[in-house]
Image (tube, rainbow, N blue to C red):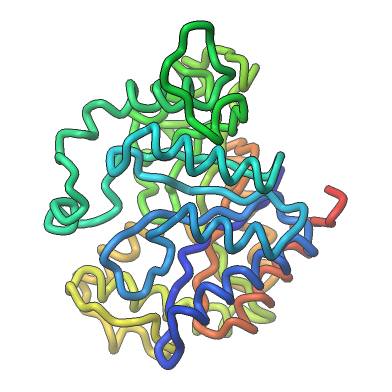
Length: 330
């Protein structure tokens, strides 16, 4: 099973946006040395703690600081963009960093309705997601005779596409198009098992993929002891509580008593969204990964490890790599 990393470029309290972007690049370089397969960044807008809104630019920043790890979008929210523009952007990335670029696609806006209007996008654009995926795929394919609109760079790069989602819709579309599928169980785990079942049952082989390939998002926070890992996890828990409250705070240092921070209702909501989480010592993480693998038969885990201190975050990924037996040659 492959292991990869999902990055949001979170801005920590007391730090800066530039530091968050550079820390993301440095983490990708470290992940490359540890043997992680890919390093993806996600498109979110109007979130003060997230610096990956200009996703293709962040990918370029990270790819320029690494040499072998695959770098990509997890994902581009395609209804926010013209497929032609995304073909140009990712064709350019593939031209600059050949053989290292992935393009995961989602149909959610990655923001609120007010910000969606600022993006000048029609909320109904999501209805055309399947057609937009195929249009994008065509722009990235070799130019056909008589084709009058070409993505330059882009045409002929055949950047690998992924369908990302947290519902049965994405699973069905990925299966129909014969594309790899990533499920966002790191924040929306409720439909995980059913979506994987549908995807595998309905999969049709394609030029890109001859068999189903399932990637599963999971929160893993590793530390030398269970107690320390639970302490470090409180930063992510506070972020979810702030999300429910509409509080626009940066990522906070961990707290000893998370129950003193959130209400019972916020705890219930956050616990539901974070149900696909493994928090603990190496032994706890090892058991958690084994259980998740047994449950999902995933080909790959996309790990989120939201920890306030960059040094301890790197340590978390080191412990995960050790438990998973990763190496740069893997």
